[in-house]
Image (cartoon, rainbow, N blue to C red; front, side, top):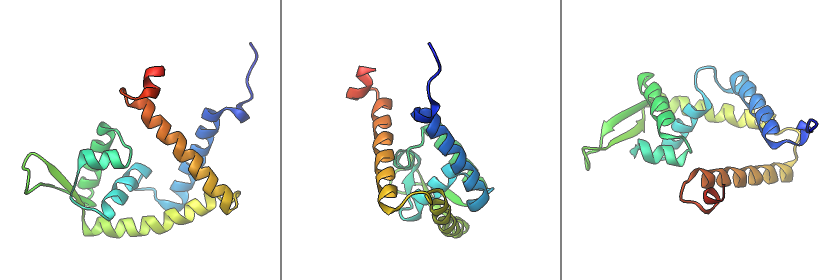
Amino acid sequence: MGSIDLSTHPGHLFRRVQQVHTMLWAAAVSDDVTPPQFAVLNGLADEGGLDQRTLAERIALDRSTAADVITRLVRRGLVERARDSADARRNVLRLTEPGRTAHTGLVRRTERMIEILLTPLDGAEREQLLGLLGRVAQAGERIRDPGSEVASET
C-alpha cells in the first residue's frame, strides 16, 4: 500500500493548525497562561461559584486536566477555591481580582490572535469553519460518551 496525501488527511491538518495556534498563542497572547488555563478563567468570568466538575464539563476539560489547571491558577492567585456555603462537600471557584484583570487582558489579546489566525478567510468562510469545527468537536464528545449511539458503533 502506498502513502496517502496528508494535505487531505484531517488529523494531519488539525495537528498543523494546532501548531500554528500554539505558536500564535505564545507570541500574541501569553507565555504564562495556557489555552486551558484561559478556558478556566473565561469560564469563571461571567459566572463565579461553579464547582470544578461543572466548570470542566462546560469548557470540555477532563477531570484530571481540570484539577491540575485549577490548582495552578489557585497557586498563582488568579482563582480562589472555597467551600460552598449551601453544601460543605462541594468547593466553588471564583476569579480573584488579579484573575479578573488577567482575563480582561487575555480576551483582548486572544481576539487579536484569532484575527491573525483566520486572516486567510473572509467572514462567511470564518463562520463556516467555526460551524464545521463545532460539529466535529460535538461528534467527538458523543464518541467519548460510552452510552452514546456513536460510541456503540465503534
